[in-house]
Image 1 (cartoon, one colour):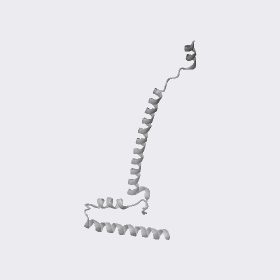
Image 2 (cartoon, one colour):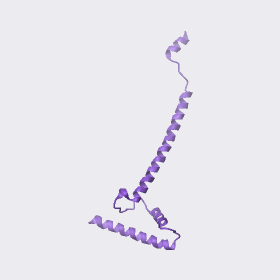
Image 3 (tube, one colour):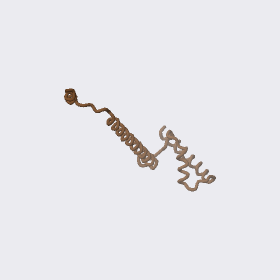
Image 4 (cartoon, rainbow, N blue to C red):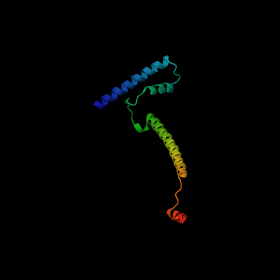
Length: 111
């Protein structure tokens, strides 16, 4: 029962917010409903609750999921570039190390 009441309160708040935004649209420079939605999305916080029928198939989830995948791809690409650079620097450092002769050759040189 409490869950249903909370759900109703959230839905009512969202409807009031949308009504307020629709009223603002008439007075603002919003050209379309999609622009209004974009402006609304910018006001949301991560802690704001949202009521969704099926979370995995909602447009909001899909949008966030794809954005997260894009961020992961960018992070992996940057890490890969750093790993290649580290490997290159380590290779250069290895080339600069003085080469040690095997012990058997050192004994031959001493004679």
